[in-house]
Image (tube, rainbow, N blue to C red; front, side):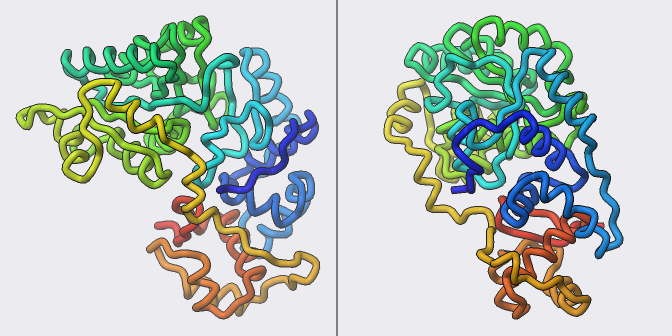
Length: 375
């Protein structure tokens, strides 16, 4: 299970420091966690950043205190709150996924059951039958006490949210809280909040969603859910990405079968062939989820966090850096394997990976695998 940074609420100055660190260029969830573990606090990590990046010749822009304060004030103006991992409002299911967001923006949802959840995803160009099936599933799940999670997209997502408005739904955004996509679903977002549902995102205020942000959003849709239901999906679609992420997070995957003649059914049918549970009603889902336990994902490797003594760690040398770079490639590999092959101490590897990450030269997969970034 990914590390949690405490079990109490952060003070406002601490939250500002976390926000500054997380919004700094090239600092993602994995890097954030490693910086906090290495330096003990966000303030100390921010002080150390210039020295870390100087050795690689990189100069990532560090978010200023004023910018962080402005974002926090802007969120509060919208009625949203910034929630840190370890705080009472942080969704517990996200503590059981790799690279969980250190900070989330959440609006609404104070009375939702965040631990009894089902994600419903599918085609944007959904068929009438697909929309009807989605409404039936979402309505029945809601009446049985489940909160419905989806991504506020057109088609299946929209149908799932609308059918569960009065029973509880969570919409995960790909952009900032003030940049809801698509525009046509802005009224739906307001309806969700008006009915006690929630909007949630890890992206900064003002962030326009890009193509690469939707898979990132999808990992939260699956991470917030005990199981994912795919209603309609083409062979290559975001819904299948969500299903794959759900499997990586040790979540259950369900699929509604469809006609082999409909391209929108190809993805769901393929999932069933690969082992996803075929479902025809909400009871099929509830039967499986009645024994679902998110803590079982502890069976997976956690994000890589070596045990080292910071005071005894010497600055890496140029030879150490060259040794690590020669061990890396564009193919993701476990960090423990790099430690074995390079012969370098785990603490040295940690520092070098931090430097390379802050320079934008590596990327992480699932929080455990690392690779050189494609140029």
